[in-house]
Length: 144
Image (cartoon, rainbow, N blue to C red; front, top):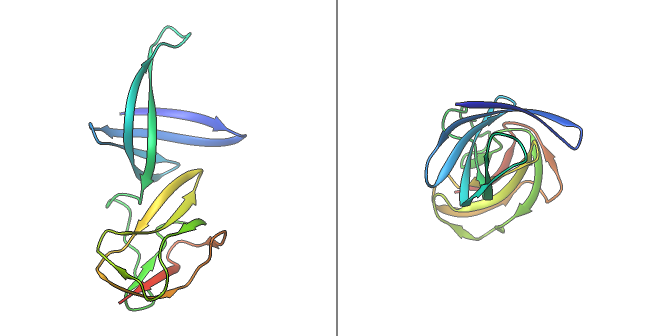
């Protein structure tokens, strides 16, 4: 386990790297756990005495199962696991979706989190719009 204190664009982040596999990295950013997919790993020699690795990230998945589940207010509701900003919606009302299908992307703490369907069904309601700020536990999309 490695811990870093980072400052990005005058925002401070405490990052703990929990586990690294060939496919993903489990990280905790300011107390919220995320799973990051790895596209490729390149060895980079830094000007510092310690060599570092540069990790190219394809996307960040929704927080891992260690984050407390959020109970939906609407039957079939998919809720936000954290406060954030909706940056892209991939589905429309009336569209059929599969369990695990990406519904939208939520930006939180400068990380993009894919919000996926917990079950197969039809999108009954899209309750948010791109650019909207949402709270933890807020219903985003209803899939029945």
